[in-house]
Length: 378
Image (cartoon, rainbow, N blue to C red; front, side):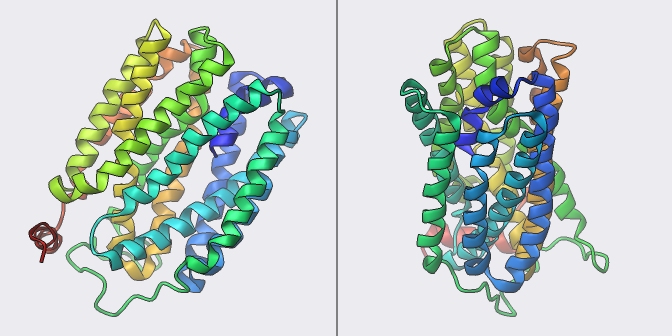
């Protein structure tokens, strides 16, 4: 994903499309991801992660090169749809697996898993900057990254849990939301999904517009602009590496509330930043603030009913990814009426709403006792 993000300006220029058209095409990436998530969630619950994750990883890696070789808007649209579909399959299957690992591990570890995603973003910024300096084409860089991704997906398959069996007493009734309608999902799952859509809309805007913001609004050279996303990804990585300990200490609601509030401050700085370095500072705060939000939402969805972790995570992640890919489109459409910087103020509003809704992650009494036991070392 990071390799795709940092090559967006070059692909946009080669295909010859505007920011607004690019925003519309990015919706297809989100729609593909949503469809893939719904399929992968059920398959993971039924077949286990060892079957679904490697297959999704190989196919996601194989389709990464397609946007790099697209020559017109139509081929780019098909490429993004395919890449999004298999990325969605991989995202849900590995997050559902992480829920079961976290349950067995006995304390929060979800944010640490998500930190490795951010590490990929940092590496992508560094690799892309080096590849651009060496004159490497986007297709070559994306093809090489895809080949490496396929090898990693296959090499790590044996280390995954062969299945995700849940003992009859594994579910925590105190965490479960009110009973769902037949064939449906608990209302709390859909609340988590809406919050995930707002948070991931903000992440999507950072992914797809941070580089363009520095390049087009602040006039930074391409090699410098690439580090806007790298700065955001780096602070998100640091935040996720620390978030699990913060969750044990203060609880998921505090992480969501305070994180979203910090993100609101950061993106507001970006929106009004007159200098490159002030924009870097804003993207850094934005990444740090958002870092712990999505892992807590995914973890809450998976633990609501561990026997249906894949399905529940697919609902939350699915709507979240619609937000992630709709976000860039919305920002693109807003550039018709306001500057790109001022369009980011929409993200400020969404972060404020998320901070106000942090109570949805309020820990049930049973889980509170578990956390106190963990703190005491028993």
